[in-house]
Image (cartoon, rainbow, N blue to C red; front, side, top):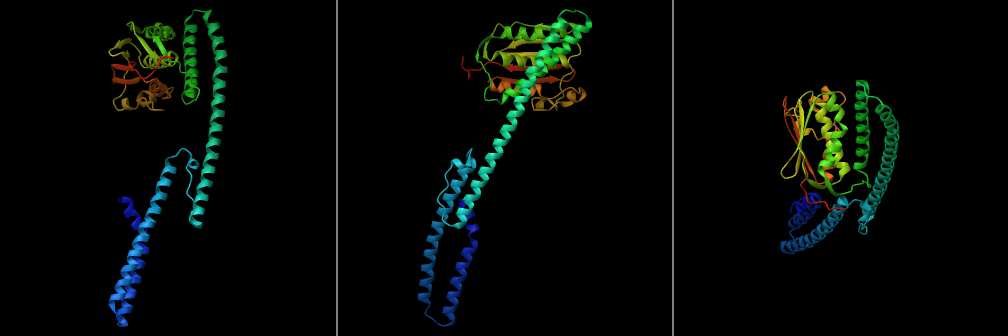
Length: 329
């Protein structure tokens, strides 16, 4: 009904012109004292013919509206065939649509090519930078001094940031290497904790790890990245105290720290891309990418991730692993 009234609004000039002609005909008949009956008959006949023409025109406009609506929702407008033009204006409009579609396709191809070039460059850079990182790790393994331990910790952070770049590039890639299978959760957690063992020792932070004795269907590499990011944040914002790792029912991995916590106004936005919050603004090295990647990865793996926090008391990150949507490969 809304569409019909919109159509009538667009045709008000034609309707007004018709009634003007009918009024002129009636006035001429009165002025020349012609019989009124033939005039009324002619006006009525014209009204019937005009109404039929109006209905036919509305059906044509409605058909065009449906076609253009399908084009608007199509991934590629040229996939929807346009009807045969009924006049020179229809042909002109169709030509404009075709030119716009060609221009849009060309721009999309150009943007995809530039994005692929950028992705390839950073992927190559990330893989090349791993070589000097591995070399430095080998050199530092031969020493056991406070300086070497500090350098090893910093080097591990650099390696983590490089891995973050690779994960960021792979998220939207068509060749994302998910391997879904049943994994031992404790094996994943121990590997992640082992990477941060030196930092736990140097900073005298207590690790309370309760074995989960659980098996989960997931991608081990991507889940490890999520756990490492959460542990990294917990270590970064926990100057003293402890970090707890345990499992809650139903199959929810919890990582709780006794750090500075998250402000209530920041908590709903910590998983947004680039959002750092009050803590991030005080720590100039924060990028606001880590937790965003965690949420994206968990969503792809059909896991859930959430956070609760009390400022000054600590933060708890919960990763829900109890899902049935993925099949073992």
